[in-house]
Amino acid sequence: GNIMWSAHGGDWLPGTTSDLVDSRVVQNTGNGTVIVLHSSVPATAQALPSIIGELRARGFKFVTLSELLGSDASHPYRAPCH
Figure 1 (cartoon, rainbow, N blue to C red):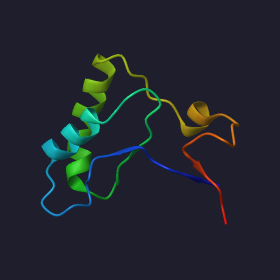
Figure 2: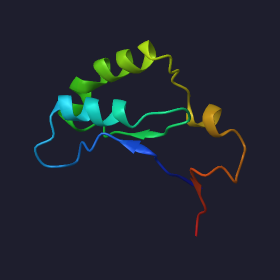
Figure 3: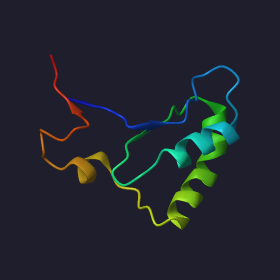
Figure 4: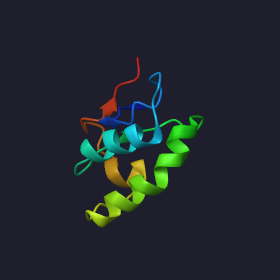
């Protein structure tokens, strides 16, 4: 199945800077958030150390999708395959 995201850094938007990616992600992250970022965007690579540091300082823990979603096929971030 597909996995849906619930927060993004908008790193595909024109004119996006690392500061914008950082603030978008940090402002929209909560418990259980699935963050989508694109590894090919330089602003994302520059923002990652700050994002990780800020979220860890706020008590968040990074886990794999398997750990987050487990085997719950009805999880709201799982999208059925058609």
